[in-house]
Amino acid sequence: MTQDMPTPDRPLRIGTRGSPLALAQAHETRARLMAAHDLPEAAFEIVVIKVTGDQVLDKALKEIGGKGLFTREIEEALIDGGIDIAVHSMKDMPVEQPAGLVIDCYLPREDVRDAFVSPSAAGIADLPQGAIVGSSSLRRRAQLAHRRPDLQLVEFRGNVQTRLRKLEDGVAVATFLAMAGLNRLGMADVARGPIDPEEMLPAVAQGAIGVERRVADDRVAAMLAAIHHRDTGLRLDAERGFLAELDGSCETPIAGLALLDDGEVWLRGEILRPDGSEAVADEIRGPAAEGAALGRDLARRLLGRAGVLRLALRPVAAGVRAEACRGSSGPRGRRRP
Image (cartoon, rainbow, N blue to C red; front, side, top):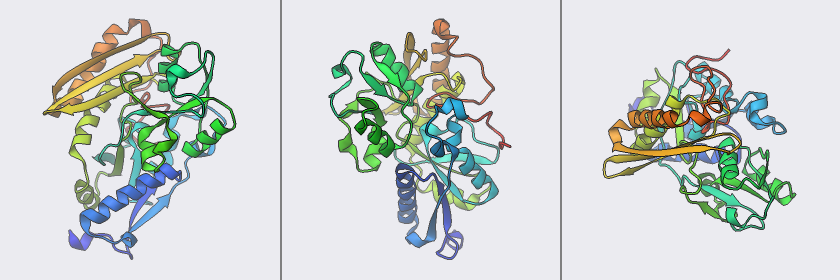
């Protein structure tokens, strides 16, 4: 394997979006690979790829093609050989990859909780009647509407820095971010505090970084195996199995969180109407090695109880995901045109 290791003359190319958080995740991946294989920083090249989702900020994602706009160009570069690996926030990722690509490496998971951010309110309960709250996440908006139907919810797209500026400009009095992202940016103090999952169940795979590669690239597969975090992989198996079985549209608010406990996985899941008027939630426990099957079982259980939500769970093309999904650009499992 030594002779196949990247060098400053033949660096491993790491593809990423250009936001500060995406770059922080790419740098963490690089640092872990450097430590695992005793390689210099010069043996890696960070390749920033401009994606459509980062360039159109004045429209909701569902109006411009969905959250797949955050991954499409990066995956095309990986398929075409322009990069060797791609680093993703796993809550952005569909449950199926395009043909020829695979995600089988996860870094240790960060804080899964949502963060409440406001210059004036200490928490959701402290928001005044009718307050304006900004979020681009369909899940968060539905959960908030379910608990506080009096609030006014407005679209709030952009990276962490953009959304903080919108708060400063008075577009809204509060918003939500992921604690994982704030921690990775060294900005945890921005949050008034984390929101307990009992109050707001997070997105599927929130806080997890996944590294995507070409299926046939054995050299990269061996390198990534050294930094794969097994426990994170087991938790995501359950959560993404849950999401895959729901196969909801990109207008379906879905939340899910798996925890490990003495060889078992404890998975909680929730489906809501987009307007927050109704919600169903349940949980399941079982052997961690059977996480994907448990996730599917929990999804079927919720679907059996979700007759009132069938309009929210309207059929879509196979492979299109929900939130963890705020959108997708089309059916998965093959290269997009």
